[in-house]
Image (cartoon, rainbow, N blue to C red; front, side, top):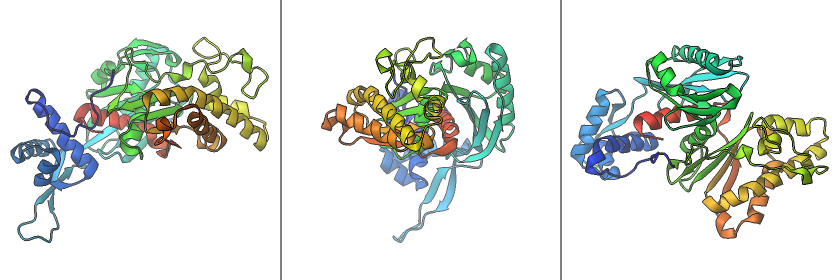
Amino acid sequence: MAHANLRPNSPALPTEARALNRSVILQHLFRRGPVSRADLARMTGLTRVTVSAVVEQLISEGLVVELGQATRRKAGKPPILVGLSEDTWEIAAVDLANDGSLTGGILSLSGEVLAHVSEPHRLAKGDDGVAELGDFCSRVVAQADRKILGLGISSPGIITPEGFIEQAPNRSWYNVPLAEILTEKLHLPVLVANDANTAALAEYTFGSVSDDGLFCLVIADGVGAGLVLSGGLLHGAYNAAGEIGHVTAVDERDTGSLIGAPLPCACGRTGCLETILSENGLRMATAGLSAAEAAAKLDAFGKRLGSILAPIVASLNTGDLVISGPHALLDGPLLEATERTIRARTLPRTHANLRVRLSTLGTDASLKGAAVLVLSGRLGIA
């Protein structure tokens, strides 16, 4: 149900030693920066001979580079530092979360966005949309100055770890082997994941989160969640973990209240959470209201969200709850009411160390998450 550990940090068993020890070393260099081979051996628990052999292989692949001697005050010759190379490989990333535009970019191995590609274009439905996406990905890849390690795609929908889209209704994509199709077209590794999962990956790798478990709620055209537990990205038994947007949140009893009557949802049901909490739903609910009226409405929505999240927080006991979406609508009454309700409805032990906040990664969060998808899938680091 969970992805392999995103941050391996201990020696491997003999049967899997080569690949995992490689990931362990890359992970330490990614998280800690340049170090000597001796320090890598000490931090990883691997032998110096193993570290030297793996580092030499990584240097030959252009993933690691020698950076010169360390500055040291002790007697003796200073050691040579090694670190991730930024001169050989880059990562391509594409974000499909916004139905009205296509966004892509080229990123360094450390997650710096080096180039942006944005087109105000709505993909066609079905196979035509897949073809249009392939052409857009080609234009993104063409922006790279170095070799491409892989292309990561952040997309709405229920998606397997292999990049097979089981269903993405807003694109009319059903049982589409998207990663396979684009890998064949572009002649490079393509990895595809649900947009909420890539948002969770971005927060886990580049956000200020702990290793105590992450619940990342994404509010955009729809509502979804990504979960990282015990170092692994949770997919669920049928790849639908985090589909919280289609939990029923409004029923007829709310008619006449600040929440309002249940509205039809794109999934064909009524009263789903995303009918009130998607970005469009929030804007429609607060349009034309005074500041005080809008605050009261957002407070009511926050209480409802908190009541839905409370049993999840109690069940998972995660350390971080991060909400990604439009700060102007989420910050203030909605966020405060969400946190207040969660704490009121759970045991103090459950929420004692819970950190509830908005994402701080900005507009490049989705691209960074898609890049982490490549880093994790290709190099075993995050």
